[in-house]
Amino acid sequence: MARRGQKKHLKRLPAPRHWPIKRKEVKFTTRVIPGPHPKENSLTLAILLRDLLGYAENLREVRAILSSGQVKIDGVVRKDVRFPVGLMDVIEIATSGERFRLLPKLRGGLKLVSIDDAEAKFKLCRIETKTVVKGGKVQLGLHDGRTLLLPDGEKPEDYHTLDTLKVGIPDQKLMKTISLDKGVYAVVSRGKNIGIEGKVLEIDRRVGTHASTVTLQDPEGNRFQTALEYVFVVGKSKAEVALEAVGGS
Image (cartoon, rainbow, N blue to C red):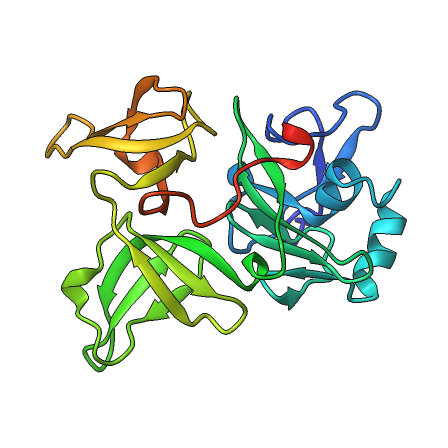
């Protein structure tokens, strides 16, 4: 008889390389369930609590923490150990009062950045799609899987793919728009320059087989180039969110 449904386990060796897990001590790890982020760009709540934060030593302890409703992701209580958390997600731990944001890490993966209460009330979301839905309203598809209808009075031509929205959580109220233009501050979310932050100096948009590129300058004055789709705007002249990782990593 054939297996029904998705597998609930995943062998550690073929797991995404950026997951901070020991590959050979234990055979299996938790598999990401379908959710706001793909497996390649996310971590499970089990890995976050056990391997990154060290709040638990095993999966039983992770389940106990989650079942008590102590963990919120983007302002919503999550209880599934396999729920995916990814780029720009806000993690709140009720009992400790700690709050974190996930950001790209140098050389790959995700890092935890400690944030205050004010920062935990919003997240930055990149526009991935822009479509017209029933009723003639414009709907924006964001990088974390959520969709947002433009409020009445907003001009659709002011919103473009790869722009960043500052969105309140969990109410999803649109607070601010940051366009991908020269002079904005951005972080690289993928590619060989992942995790590097800097000011956008030039945008070379191309049509056809040639990839569009962006030239940035990091805080040390070094210039580098990356693909347009790898750039995530985090502020106009400076970052709207904290970018320094826990422990300085």
